[in-house]
Image 1 (cartoon, protein in one colour):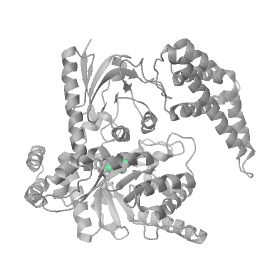
Image 2 (tube, rainbow, N blue to C red; image 1 turned 90 degrees about the vertical axis):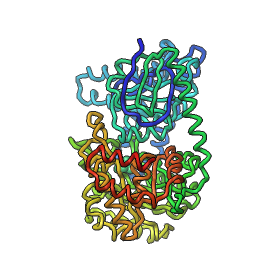
Image 3 (cartoon, rainbow, N blue to C red; image 1 turned 180 degrees about the vertical axis):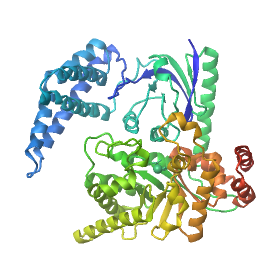
Image 4 (cartoon, rainbow, N blue to C red; image 1 turned 60 degrees about the vertical axis):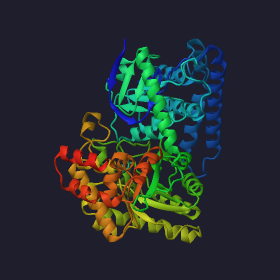
Length: 574
Ligand code: PEP
Ligand code: MG
């Protein structure tokens, strides 16, 4: 039966391929068939993951610091015992062969069985040990997903599959970075949720908020995903397939053409220079940044280094990651945002998810409440500043006092490094994110303490319009053209320009080509966006005369009716 589904397109383009359903459990792993001839390889992949985790645990045991509590060694010993038990290191091998399935799936099935057995134990302490089994399984899964699978999806006839999931956390998305999916679709999620943002960074078409995709679509059914229109066609007929293959070719051709703009300077028709920077989540994203011709990194979402792991990255690990980005950008600016967790970006050691995480202990609030974690990150960023043009960005400021505390902690970190004789850039610029309406309205109360600001329109829209970014039932209310949003953004840009403080936009608004002229008209000259959006935005910049935007921008900011606003936008983009 063929049918279509409508959701929110979060990453453009068209993909055609067989559905690959993701298991809908707390520990979601993909399930796919392995060609009989490749089963030996899959078992070997499982064995090497076990060996890697064994080595990891042994090294951890050897490096337990002298003064560490005795439980630490006991805990590692227990994990090694669990790992070496045949129920975990042998049974999944048999399942792989019997069921012709991938190693992750076999392991997950075995874990479910063991957890059930543990649940039946009367002794509370022993029953609790199921947590350790899950933790060991997570380690093995990490090892499995960490090394890219050599096995293609399905039997190789259909090309890469389309991932169908009920929901994906940003952390899940990162794990899928390694896999060869042509597109993915989910039942839940909003356009600016972090899952959607990571989806964009995978550079594959994606549609979220489909509501019933996971229960309705079956494994192997052929899907067309139109990430631009937010449409998914299930089991399309031959005519539709031909039509979409054509559209797919046109889209790819268009993207190829835009790539030619890579080294063209972003300058308007009336000679206004415009900075087009990129947002990244990982050091490895730098490659895409360069491919798309960004002249700097306007937002490095450092929190992604903290996800998908049971521990926190230490100072050295963070320093290496930040330094590698700073060095590979060869003197171009690299804006590292301090840890912005909470809301829809939880980490294992983060604050407890409360009833209203978006309004809770998030971002700078969390960092101020965890001075040790904050100090470690500040030291790592400061140290990296010696190796490139690093800028530091503090997220989610809401008042001057909060900024003052963060700056005090930064100064303390500087003093530590000075005492230790460690080199760093004494003049490293410090910026603040304007993403809370209070900070936008009272932006003047922060500017004298900052070297630059960056407007986070994703959160600014969330908080101004009272719509949870992660809740697809209110995602239709997300509106960057709401007059309240336009006024706040314009106010911040105007005030910063008046006081001579550099201002940029790093939320999704900056990467929407239809809004480029709106922002240019408001006086913005610095944009930071997902690298894939950069060529499209650059194309608009090159065709724009800022002078010619003045009258229409004034009219836009005095309009209140949605129809009028949309009418002016059409004229601005004509
Ligand atoms: C924003 O809020 O606009 C932003 C850029 O930060 P994030 O999307 O990571 O919250
Ligand atoms: Mg934000």
